[in-house]
Length: 267
Image (cartoon, rainbow, N blue to C red; front, side, top):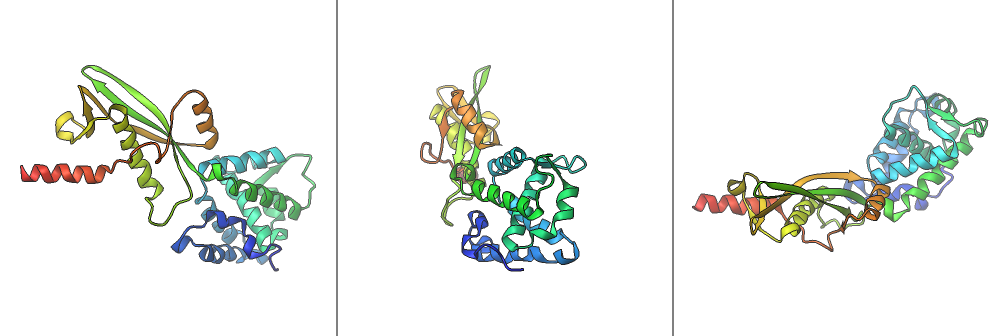
């Protein structure tokens, strides 16, 4: 069957990147989802859905689940307890519409999901089309494509210690020369710790752990937890400061430790 949607309007292009994650490679990967479907084998389609889900942010996954639940779709009671499993299924149904093979999924939908009585008699293809609308809408929302974190810095002066909590957002749109999101949030956590006391970096030989020192106060990263866009907005309303790469100076801890080690060797 031919796709009902032109390739140029592929809603999953929002998850594309560069290299092995380019739009062309994404098309190749998605097309593999048709393998085995004519005989009822959904494993290839499920694998494509897993690949795409793993490229989504936790905010996108949360929103897809919420939208599908509002429509009347939910995970089957005997399915995995991992909520992202349900987002993968919704993505799978969306891909099926894009590939024009949604009519093969009737048995899968009724065995792997629960349908509210208001939609239990809906046509399978129509249900999948709704899933495509949900996924397409979520993937075009810029706020949901960002990565959000709750960054906690520890501080200590004498016998007194405490914590500083701030919010941090990594913009999903980045040039291939930019830091990876993983490296950025590490450098951001150190940048925030440095901002807490505007101190001088010290290696772990001075205070037992790498930290920043200023007038008897040391600060250091304590934890970094990914949060959803909705959690970010809620915590922001509660008064937690918002940070980004434009508001703080990222601190390269690896380079800083290398300098410390070199100085120690010279000494």
